[in-house]
Image (tube, rainbow, N blue to C red; front, side):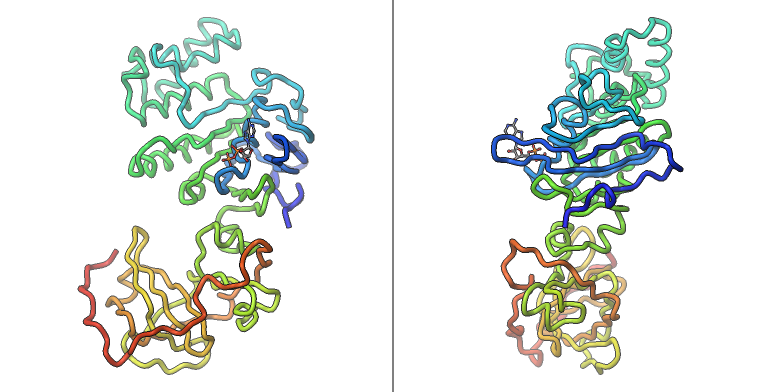
Length: 387
Ligand code: ADP
């Protein structure tokens, strides 16, 4: 299941070594395989986002690449050079941490220039480079401000400028937005994506937030228990997960496993995903005329979220419950529990998955029909406008 280096995001250059490569990297703590046979490659100007549940090895992977941990096996290469045995400061790698790890008592200029002093840059060159970064990151007016008097977003920019000052080939970011509030995080994720797509360095970005991973990353690596569960172009991994665990981890709700899966198209291998982005919900309140790709369903639950409306509907013929999600404007009116609806489910919406060995042999949806009387429907909920 976990891919080898052949499945990891591939370098796009013609024959040139990728800017960062790890080959079969391993790190254990006692019995825990924190990083287990991880191979990846990232080209300059590209960003790989690493996601996975807490404890799956994301930080250990980053720290092993950075030289803050000594791996038990495998190699780390930067620009084709094996740096596995080199100390952190000689790897040509910059790092941005969750807490930003700035020097609170120093001003912005000294924080940004810190790595240049360490790398023994000449005074004039260092001053020029610092000026350039302060301008680029909108920090010029704050150059003499102590960093403990900055906002979270400003500190984030200082941390990025500091990591990029010595012009590293590789930038590693360990949850750099996690300490900020959600609104700021969403804004900064877009800024960060722009910064990291500058040519000249390759980035690996660890996050627990999948939206952030997709905003910032070109490629996505999903880690599970120290291993790469799936890797590839971010949108493709999200749209076409290969196994039931990855599908659920990435937020897919229509994942069926075991007996239920075997009753469904593409479910013969023991697990199947219904890709809700390909499902259309139509004909609210009117008995559907099934046929072709259209199937009759009864609404079981309705949710409003940040991302629009979610409707759970019981497919009468298939005997399973599915989630549809979309914008209210697509529906025209909000359905109620017990409503008859028609779902347009094209064949390609069903995607065969490898089953998750550790999961119970049940679908995500309860196999019992809805206990609602569709003749005595609740009053239609207030139409709250498009979301
Ligand atoms: P993540 O960043 O995905 O939350 P980590 O890389 O921090 O995961 O941890 C991976 C596994 O390694 C976890 O089981 C964690 O408890 C263990 N681990 C991490 N660092 C150490 C350490 N210094 N000593 C012992 N175990 C560790």
